[in-house]
Length: 483
Ligand code: NAD
Image (cartoon, protein in one colour):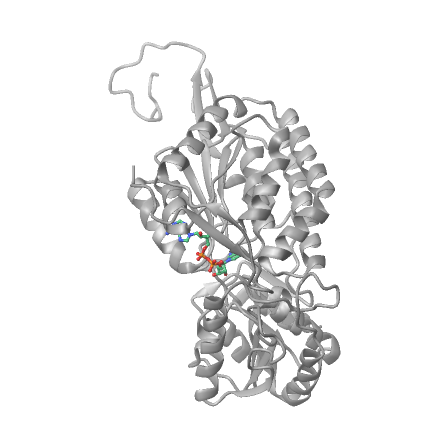
């Protein structure tokens, strides 16, 4: 075991005021070990709980999330900055995910496959892995945990959660909801990524690591998992494209782009971070986008008038400032925003920003910005838009606005992304898989695919007779064999 971390407590800030809300322990490898041991012990009974009983318990979790919505949402706004109404939505989506997996898990089936001999029965059964170590970021902490918790528990695993250091308070409150499950089925550890998080990844008894976060951390975690030959589920960064075709209703498309770029202050893995607008509508599109962006209210997420809250912290805001600076240096034009708001002495605010005349040499079009910046680039032919959309290491989602069905078909066939949104940006559906192509990691959450990530297949090969076979008995009897 590693030595105890030198940092004992991690302060939790309110990003709108910079006030310290509380502090949580930076838990050591020894403490992680205790949590994993409790989860491992609980797994011995949890894995055998009949599916319909697990389903009832998961519905109860959903009911309790709904009941706790107001309190959880307030804590989440205080430590995460997201406007209160958006955090209430997050609770509703989380509750719905538990209801969904309660039902599909009790309908989850293995199968009977054709046997090679008449005396045999071949079954494929689905089993849990054991203890899942789940690590999530701060932007949708309860939802991203629910997307792991609900399928992992439904499949019969137990779980140890490590929230982001910025948002542990809501997770600790959320943890109380799981008092309705047997002890040890859900454990929570708090602390920094490189201490508590890494101890969870390196623990020999975490059978799966389910990680959502940045590409950089995902690479580190997958190296450790590869060394330990441990299953690693990765949901990493994005740089989603949003293509607006000339036949779109401009007012609706502008609002959709602004929503996709500035929701949660642009701190969404599926934010529209590259907008491509057909050149004939480029100018009016920018004029309307400027007016709409400048009408958005920036403020504390607790204020019901707020459209755009603070960013989570200074290093994230610095990255946004660097991207805007680099873009302007290389010839981009600031259409709206482009700086910290002058009226905010405290808090990690940044104005919703529209950049025009950007190109793919700029970091704002290449690297994940993860902030309230909407860079817009014109395109001439639809094929160019597809080429631009695919010009990224990431492949999480992609949006298109058009009524032209030929363009839609070409877009969803050609664009390498895990979700394609047509005239409806950033929506999720519990029943549909969510995850990314390329460097976004390749794993999937939600849908049947999200359950399968936490199930392993076991092939049961059963012969009803004990035949006296020769010792060189081949894998399958050859034609004409006497066996
Ligand atoms: P991050 O990778 O820095 O942190 C995420 C989590 O990993 C935190 O809990 C952190 O404590 C932990 N961590 C950090 N270093 C670790 C280590 N060495 N070992 C174990 N755990 C470690 O991510 P971030 O920058 O805080 O979050 C934003 C990123 O998350 C963005 O890249 C965003 O696109 C991504 N994200 C992806 C999805 C998705 O579904 N694909 C969803 C939300 C966010």
